[in-house]
Image 1: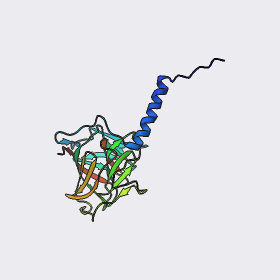
Image 2: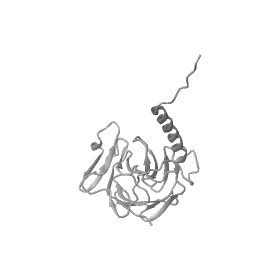
Image 3: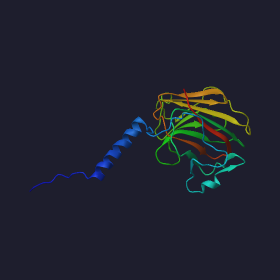
Image 4: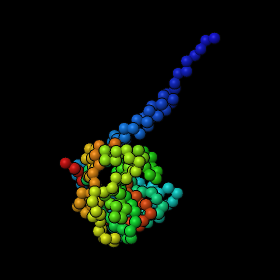
Length: 222
């Protein structure tokens, strides 16, 4: 009896390559090919609306969670989700000025890639009250200081540098190559080196607490 070999169709070959890419991404990290490297100051928040941002709040109307009032971004904190930049970025200094109206939780996700979900692949600069400066790895990301620990958190170095609840804090996140440094009100709080992911979207979390944000700025890094 004559036998025939089963030739892979283009769709099957593509599916195979997709699976290989997904496996490789999970091991080596995901890099955003078209990520923008800022050459000048970029205001990500225009003080009027959320132009340039994608609102992701699964199962709810995002406008009930995120809004702009009197030139300030207001987030109710519920349900869980985030706003993220439409564009992807690499090699930048990100400055976020925000405050809690009462003690609570939020965060900034950098180098976010892949599908929108709670929570997407990224590295989190923790925003929880009294914990700003911690790192969290999400979705398979990692870095040298994390070292493959079971705990996804890498605590800040030293005591909290946050201002009292109700006052504005300045969070500076400097991403250069495979290194991320976190500054709270001018104080270096933490550093991640040899990061698996070095580019992607930037997200601000809705994570259970009411927050306000008045500035989100990108600048070049030397």
